Image 1 (tube, rainbow, N blue to C red):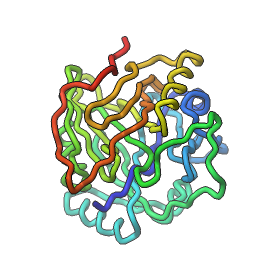
Image 2: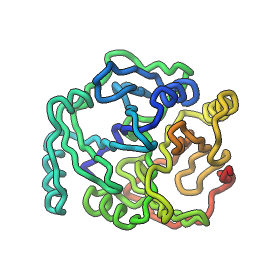
Image 3: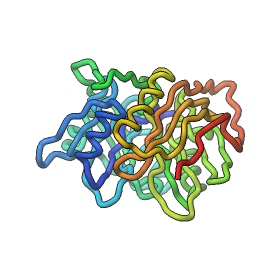
Length: 286
């Protein structure tokens, strides 16, 4: 596996200020407001990286950029060759784009759902320790930001691209009454990206922010009541990745999952399976 982890995501939203306030007061991310003319209106931090998410104004809400961290420049070169052999147009990031992302080198291409997808190396780490405004600790490190889940009617095309071209493993499949999910991983995190078959629309289903304890999940759930945040799904525990979590609706319309206790995948022994139900909970909220 050449790709190491989910490094960052760009988020489009009709109201970046509202999303930034939600990130600070409900999720517990620290927020840095950009200057006029910068690539992002706000940068959101959750660990030693300078930011893991950024916000830009957009007509509709959703992930606009997905950035994958690779080991070194040689890994970028090998992945570029692999992408071009698959017929994918790959472009080098400009000096300005690399400064924006705070990386030494970056290439980009159009991935599934038409999303700009970036491969980068040499991330410049922040000089100061991350301090959540709510005292939240997030699970990142070698597992990266968390995961993103996307909706598409062309789900098999997306799964094949991430598996055959980018080299992700198929961790599991979940066949639920409301849709079939395909979970793909690149490190010990069960999945860093997933796709759900959707015939109604295409876009972002949710982003996971994993915290370090069930108590942190409970505190986040309390904050949804305090700030009148609508839930997408109730508290529950997934059968496939073991995540104890709930889902809430972000100000951009897509979901944020707050969870704890996700399983760690051992590549040497892992067996991909098909799940048909969660252990408990995660009931959709109308």
